[in-house]
Structure formats: C-alpha cells, structure tokens
Length: 143
Image (cartoon, rainbow, N blue to C red):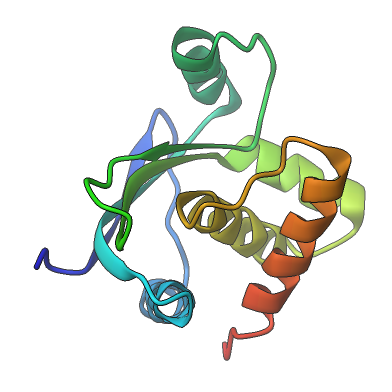
C-alpha cells in the first residue's frame, strides 16, 4: 500500500499552512471516516492568476475559482490527487462571508477531498449536499 502522505507546496506566492500536523490528522480522519485509504495527496497553494491559467488550460473555464482538484487515484479505495487552492480567492471569500481566513481555507481544503471521495456540486441541489458534507467534516476539527 502507498504511504499516506499529505504534502504542501506553493506556486508563485509565499504561503505557510498553519497547524500542518493538526490539519493533516483531520484530513486523514475524514478520509478514513469515508472508508477510504490515503495515498499521495498534494495541496498546491497559489495565486488567482496561477489557478486561472490551470482553469483555462485544463478545464477550458475562463473564470477565477478558489480550488481545482485533480484525481490521481488508480483505484476507488484510495484517495490520491493534487488540489490547487488560490489563497487570494480564499482570503476574498472569507472577507465577503465575514469569517476567519483559516475557517474558509479548511472548508476549501475539505471541499477538494470531498470531490476526491466522489461528491459532486454541479447542480444547486448537489451544492447544498456538498455544503452539508463540508459542515460535517469541519465539525470534526479539534484545533
């Protein structure tokens, strides 16, 4: 079995994930709660411009977004992927919502995991279900 790893990288910005150990433990707990194994997972924190270019190049979407998730798993039982997060979008969204940056960051980070777990948010109904799953996962944080 692949070693369980959660790596953090940055592209074109300076960013440090606070509470890395606690965040990693929480994400692993969420994945295991869904009865999946964790393989290699990488979060890449970047700028709006960097993520916009990925959105255009790989998804043919000419819009800003806060997250793009690429599933790299070879089998259904393992969660592996690259999750790109625009720190600028998360900061703006947190300010717009009147919530702490870290709370919005954790929501976005777990949103990517939920996509890797098979959740979809392509319709209004599915968006509501995804938000409920995010809330459930966020309630598991103990930090």
